[in-house]
Structure formats: C-alpha cells, structure tokens
Image (cartoon, rainbow, N blue to C red; front, side, top):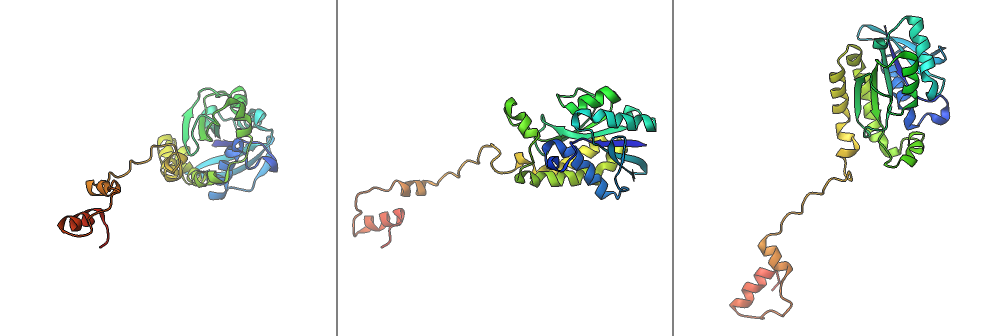
Length: 241
C-alpha cells in the first residue's frame, strides 16, 4: 500500500492559494481515477483507490499546513507504512511556475508542511515539488504563497494537474523520471518561460535590402521631371509617373 499526501490548508478561503496546489493535485488524482468518496480520518480527508494495481490512500491533512505531519504520521502508523511508502505533493518556491521535480529525501527548503512531515514521518519519502515561482523579493513571499493563482496561471496549472493525474501510476510504479518527462511534455507549450513576454530577446529585425535602404534615404531635392535620368530615379525611388 502507498500513501499519497497532498498538502494545503483546509477551508474555502484557501482553496485557490498557491500553497494549496498539493490539495489541487490530490483532487485531480481523485477525480481521474474514481477513488472512493472522501471520508474523515486521522485528522484528514482520506480516499482509497487503486493505481497501477497498487492500493493507494489519498490523504489531505486538515490540520493546517504547519501540522501536516501529525495527520500523515498517524495514517502511516495505522497502516504500518515506512517513508518509502509515502509520496507528498506540495508547492515549491524555488521552481518556476509550470515546472515539476521528484526527489527522495532532502531538506525542507523552509516549507513548514515539509518540516512537520520530516519531524513526524522521517525525511526519506518521495517529494513531488510543484513550482509556483518566487516573487523575487523575500518580503513578498508570504503574500505570494498565501495568494490565489492568477488567471494567467491557469494556462499551465490546469495542464499540469491533468498530467499529474494522468501519469500518477508511473510514479506509483517507481518510474520517477518517466513521470517527470510526461508532465514536462504536457506543460511545456504552456509554461510561462515559453510564452511571449518571457524576457527572451526578440528576434532581430530582417535586414533591409540595399534598394529599400536607398528608398528610405531618398534625397529631399526634387527629381528631374523628364529625360532618361528622371525615369531611372523615379523607378529607383518608387515615385509614380
């Protein structure tokens, strides 16, 4: 049996927050794979289902983010699971929006939900880090994390959540790299850095031909009205006869 935990804060007022993207991913898996209805257990919402032939318990702690480990740890002890049986979905400031990485173990990166999980469950579980981007200023981090996703974010967020749900069986079977590749392919076209306005250099303007350059610098003096020279100059500089 595996336990997949999505992290977030309970309550309608937090539903759209970037900090709740772990809940959003768990909900996408729940919908896509027809898990059993959510029920309350272990100070969490839990749902059972199967992925790739493996029995899986989805869990969304209702203890608020900072105490996520209490709920997940209780469920792990009840089912006699080890950190190797745990997959956690959560938001990552240090990844650009639309990026996703999977790793086993590591530090918390200042994420309070992960700090709590490390304390209650041990650190050696798989972490699915879903990039929400950094606002660029430490003073703005709190408002960024506890703020709603912008409307523009839906162009990458919806495809990413769909790709997580579509390919979660690969993660369950241990194919972390394959899972990351599938999600990356699904979100590549919509990721912010691939869209216009990403800060990339604009393509150089096409160089003008010598004829056009000559036309743009045409002499201001009046051209001869008649004769072979007048006809040639009118043709060169585009003047109508």
